[in-house]
Image (cartoon, rainbow, N blue to C red; front, side):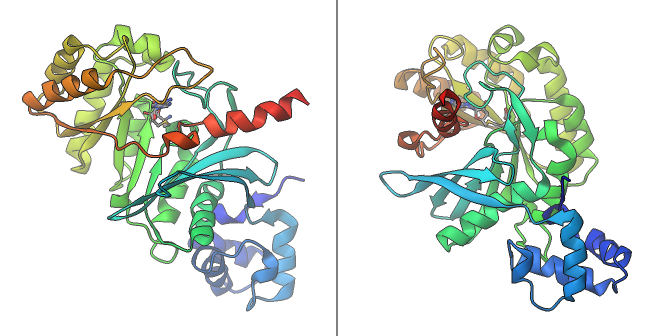
Length: 348
Ligand code: SAH
């Protein structure tokens, strides 16, 4: 029988769960503390709860297991990439990044991805399954345990499309920012989406303080459709109109990600076209030099093209940065490490 992931439940749900097991509801509070404050990974580590309660729980529930299969540390030791296996053997990746202002962890939200972006490694084997909220948290808990350092920022930019796993993503954000748990401020959480407009609109109503990042990657729909199948479903106009509403409703600035691909989306005319469309919007553009994936034929833009592109946006008063390159020596592009790992297994 498949067991439910206890780590995905909030305190209220654990209190109700305790009651259904004929326990006082405060036992649920204690359980929450063990799982999200002390961050145990097995029932046997829990001390002050009645044994029969834990036994009953373990019949239907498990605490999402996670195991480090591989860790690659970059030469400068400021980035580490983890390949994790989950309880069912699924593999996901996370990246740990050390910055002056604190440590960031980039987590996966799905095993694989079904969005099919032409330059991305995560999508090569399609979507296997969604992660539970607990499995998303486990990536952070495990990295914090292994490094012994506090994680202060979380970005959901690893494998998967987070808004394609909406309910679990939301439960994850609430647990992550719960003051009784690991308590990472929502202002330090970024969620990146390929632009699922219906879900963006839904998220507006949730009253979250997270940063929303949209993978734009193109100045117009024609180019975007060549790179991202999702562009056939939603036009850039629809995305921008949802973004404007999002900014108005939440007061939060939006980030647009723009992966720079040689000869595809990196011309000066593209920068001008993008500037015109973003004019007046409370946004920030993050230029990402493409991390070339060996299974894909796309190449990274030339340095000078990236520089010129940035200058044009700046001249048009658009906030823009070039993403600091971390971990390109350790297969840090989404899905790369996992692909290198699963291939030898598949061949057997
Ligand atoms: N599905 C989400 C989040 C995952 S990817 C999304 O689409 O936003 C995080 C970011 O990295 C996205 O902007 C994605 O398009 C980009 N990306 C994926 N593969 C890349 C690569 N090989 N080089 C550069 N950027 C890449």
